[in-house]
Amino acid sequence: MSIYLGFKKHIKSVVCFVLYYSGLLNFIIYLWKIFKKKHVAVILFYHGFKNQKDWFLSPKMNIESFEKQMRYIRNRYNIITVDDLVDSVKNGNDFDRPSIIISFDDGYRDNYDLAFKILEKNNIPAVIFLTTGLIESLNAPWIESIAYALQNTEKESVILPDLFGNSPIDISTNKKKRDLWQMLFEKLHYLEHEQKIALVADTLNRIGANQSYYRVMLSWGEIQIMSKKRVSFGSHTVTHPNLNKMQIQNAMNEIEESKKTIEKELNQAVSIFAIPNGKTEDFNEVLREYCKKIGFEGVVTTNFGYVTSKSDPYNLPRVSFPAPISQFSFELARLFLKSKNN
Image (cartoon, rainbow, N blue to C red; front, side):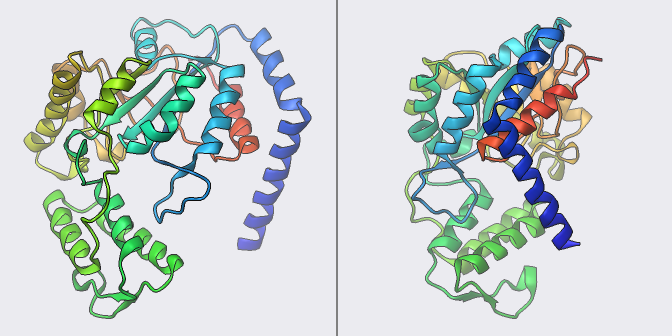
């Protein structure tokens, strides 16, 4: 089975390569835009970035790949702001061109150091969803903190009794560190909030090297600079918890306090909220109604799909595609081509 899947993946890569570099995909897109009168919108989402020479245990996108993607969509699609998207959906207006929104989650410093220069150079608007309690601090989302600890620890093994028993876990190579990191994500992700916080703290303490790194999240000064250059900001809670795994009032506080903090720092309204993790099981209707009540105009998820004039503005899907430009262009075009407006 694994051989079959590997072969299938290889064939798909070859097809994507041929379609992109032959120009055939561009021709298909050109004809499709001429003959189709009503279109949909796609919200792309990203997280962190790195230079080609850098290595991180947690996955980050090469900034060169991001730049290729931005140049590609700039020349072929209509890039709009998230506010434009929500206005169209709320008013029931169809998109007259295939439209794209660029979004980033969490608020990593590399969004400013690396991605912002590319957005500015290509005159591309974007929205960054901020985890406000981490801004301008040496902290990071819990899974990123574990990645850093594993990447920088001098230990070659670790015992995590509350998670995996009393047997030592080998972390002597980068591959074994990444394997443990993935195991920890799967083990901790859907635990009740308080239990997860305690286990994360214990895990970091046992691995070591958890608080000695430079600032990986944005500062308010960097955010203010970007806010003047076509980058808007949305709420992504205070501490990036799983909202469905905590008491409802605490979840509401996470949402509202994040909104208030951004509004205070930027002196402007915050109208969009991004659900941490973003899947259906990570949110509920009580919190969705609460978002409406406190003034959000839209809520974005990470459920796969596109946006039409009939979409629910408080349940907007987003997508993330492979980095190689041939595969990225193919997957993006395929989503647009198979879309329906009703």
